Image (cartoon, rainbow, N blue to C red):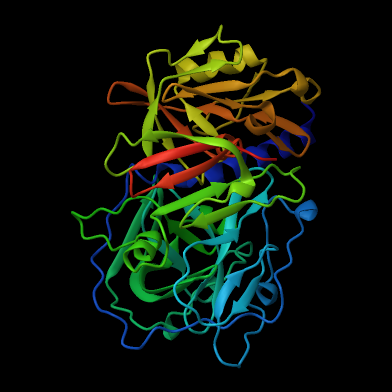
Length: 435
């Protein structure tokens, strides 16, 4: 391999692995302390920015950076309005009204590897780029620190805790595998699209592992299940449900391909958007009390002649993982059958790549879920980055859990299917995504 090509590939894989650092959150979380105390003031409202956020899909860098002036813009001094995410993903004002039934915001697709959205915090209208993570529950945001002490590549917004309504100062601690976050708990108003959530507890992260600085994000919004036994506070979505801000205890993802054109990635709270899927949903019940986990009957190539995990397996949805991570005894033969060749790189993952000129000949991979065939095309499971065509199927140690084969379904899977997370009925629904 040409030395320059090796450098590019190394950087590409490093970004992918960095994006997947959140995937291990469910296996090593240091539980946070209880949050106490209500807001002392009435329900506040965010003020809208006067300039739209401008991110052009065709000009996205490998590691995105949106300037502070564009992110925060300048907030109006007029009567406060609620924030609304428009079809262009900008934050626009809408007049006070009864609680909304659904709210949808744009997600930005960066190199088919990461998806992030914009939220607002506090009455001063601080705006942050965040991941929406189905494998964790707490929300955390980076706090204001002395920028002279931070790495030069850290260029995301930081939360000014001096403006929040309640800061109990109780310790906040969370671990994503070997990557740690520490700080204190706070409460403030959080705005996501049309929905304003008061009394929201989140962590002020005063220490964040270096890997998160390199991702250029301001925090994570957990959408998983809280640990009641350890008095973990309600996450953002649970607060929306408990306060009657959404019509149904459902949120849903649409993750586009980079070449999708006019359809932009979305997350919706309170329901689903038929504009982004076709056909009916295939529903499957959860098999774990505190994870978005379910049973897969088997995995096979489109012909049905090659079958993997034949006796069934468990899978967990992971909205922050780039790849589909499965057991070694399935992923390696699957990639070989698809014509993939190993990529020799340091790190926990065994990965493969394809000849980019042969992608049209790659078959669909089918996941049999609740007796229904869900077909994933090569346009979804191939990750195209900087002239490379990487397989979205990867493996690592530890993908056997409780004696069963285990899969973690990330963005390479979710691009193929509009995915509905139904907390009320404890089930997950999949419908073929429109592209």
